[in-house]
Image (cartoon, rainbow, N blue to C red; front, side, top):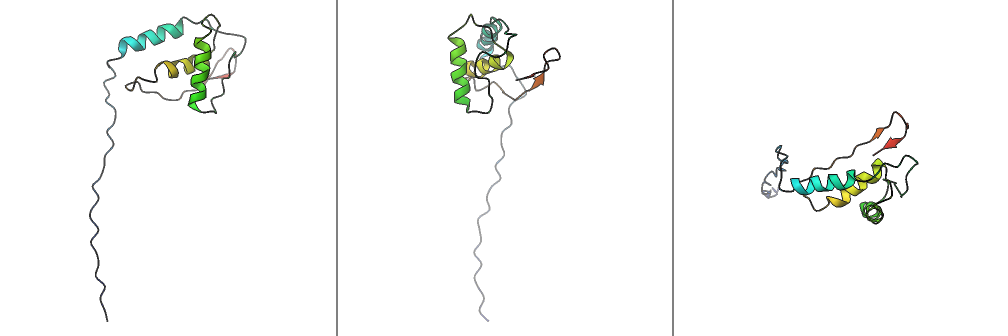
Length: 113
């Protein structure tokens, strides 16, 4: 009976993902406040969306919508449109943690965000 030589496979080291720090103060705090102030300067649109507010599309298209909104600063916006602005205006801020959110307005009974 012939024995086969068993090759030893090198052990692969474990790789641990570094979790973000819990300290949420970061260098772009002033810039983030400026973004918030510019979004807050828009009036709220109670008549329905003025732009394409579909969230089932590429992020680049949401950025295009944000560009349209920025091009018409006197036009009122809804909350999802403000979210598109926030994504667009903070895209270079790597310290900003983004997460999805959705809610319904009690008054309008429509989804938002």
